[in-house]
Image (cartoon, rainbow, N blue to C red):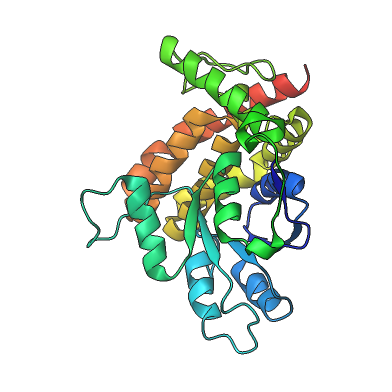
Length: 303
């Protein structure tokens, strides 16, 4: 990287450990001081104890979710961070009813969050170059130590991630989907692989050791997460189903389980819209793909 920020204090808030691990790894080259919280209330408590230079806040979490917690922070007595920039983390594009129809989904999402008072937003899974853009634009200039060096995209962490992403994109354009795990650092045959380890490795900043740890953590959550998804569908608990499938969508895409991520997104949207018929009709297929992806992860991890 061509800058460090050892005196910068950053707070990352996400209810999923895998997402916090990725942010921690991606921020490591900056030498920034990172604090984490796993929920909105924990974040509110920390805001009264420490001043931060930047807050990275996930939107979809158990109550209070990120947006609710952000709004609460504005009137929070003792808040030391009323002027601190907040960046929304989200795996969903959001378009307000009154949004400019000429805007792209990402532009409309950015406009939505800025309208709520956020400084910007980061799409999930978080890419190194997007995080770099946020840091350079929102951290105080006095906290940035710049170096005369090549662009972050040309060396180190960013180079590894970019190389994998470029290779993956090239393969996706040329071949059909794969159905099993692929070797570390090698892209799968397409964008809908059961486990595209090339894409997952890129989201881990090109760090295979980190990717393996993330993949193991993701696999270990299978029983609990699968049970929650199945039970919430059976009970008709749409809020619990929405939160569980949202988390599955984000974490699955992070490790390269792209088919599963797409299926989880459809289930999340159905739960959000109260479409219980869709949820119940598709939960078996969702869980079957979940099991298939976990099996592929197990094969990869044992190689």
